[in-house]
Image 1 (cartoon, rainbow, N blue to C red):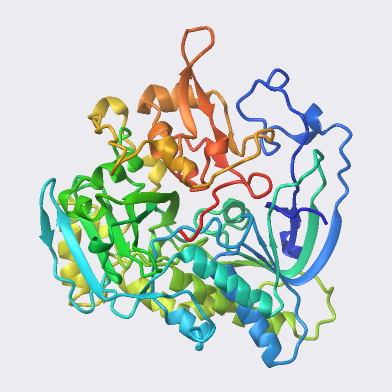
Image 2 (spheres, one colour):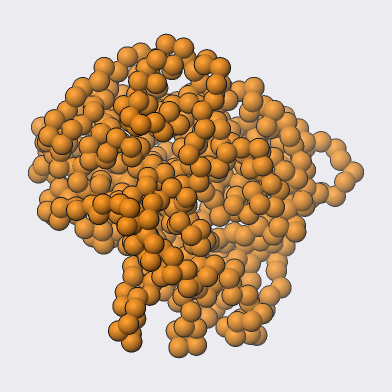
Length: 586
């Protein structure tokens, strides 16, 4: 059958909730014909591109009641809840879910320490159903690190980082399990995969009464929707972080299943927001999941989140766990950090935003799965009575369902995010990390977020970098190949792959800006903030000057470049087929 892969919204059609799906690009394109950096049709229109001559552009159309874009916790929870309601009320309901990864969970990356509140609501019998929550948290450690020492911080009940009652999970495996539950209920799931023939096929047009957008953090379609429907008119710009993660098999003598470790401090300075996690999994072998998060509002263009992560593993408190172990997986993903102040309007004619797409992550908890799932469930409960009501209008007329936003504001999601709203922006002070920790102790732990003011974030992350001439270059130690590693050997562990003959999905609005602005003013920060070696400045063939080279095949779909680029010239769009990482339980 046809190969469903990535998806594009038609701005003119969204009021009717139409989605277009495009298929695999397989037309020969020579760099001699197309010497430009960006050759993607979003920048270089098809009607001016000789590669599209003679291609049949007619679309096949299909209809569904609800279409869900994104097979993560939010999208799958919405699909499941819709089919649960249909079963309870004996209604026919066609729910289609599309996912750009080759299989459900293959692009999922998180810590992850799961708070089971939403899961308990969705499947009270999740244990009997075999949900892969194998590791209840048994021990909670929090540290402030200096270069050589650890300062323990007591994890008092009521603090957002307290993990009593939570589970350490491999989120990709949990999402895969959710996919199985959805299929059992009759949800049609369409993961993407690359075509086997050297042809291009025109995409499918899929009509629905409502489309749910659950693409995850900084979604490609959500960006278009924000502009088209002015959904961010009454909120602050979203602020983000990048999370980098590895999976290790360690010496069994050092393995403490159920232990959760978090740290702040070294190797970051007090004015760079970030921290680490190290979780001991109980999966039948001595596995630990570890990672490092850096707020993308950092100011020094010489900072490399990847190399900070590698350096952190050499701290004596961390190294003692990893020494003698083997690294088996690597990945990275951006995450929302704006919280309550940055939530956009989430409903519009024909659609809704759910999960990490609008940004329901609880930053102090470092948790967003439970809120993402609940948002999908609330969306489903608002949609169901509308799409199943007897209506003389067209079967696929787009519905506007503002009740979803109303229900969100009455839910525990809203209460939870409001209570912690000031913790992340409180770090913007002279004392940085330490001032933020004092604020959290006084105003959250004692007052539970009831202070009568709401602090603001610093603004767009892309506007925070200082010119390179105002900053000190950071000297990073060379990787030792035992605890720390180079970038390309790390990307190799992500399973990342893209077909090489497609137009690069990392597009530039103006091919001249990287050298003229990013390199000239900021010393090419995309070389350092990308966790996959996608961007590098290389000498021109003439020997005079530099040019930006984009190694799009390395991209792990983290979206950091689209967020942090100081020129806002990079536009990340979906690649073909199942391109991207192939994570196994990250």
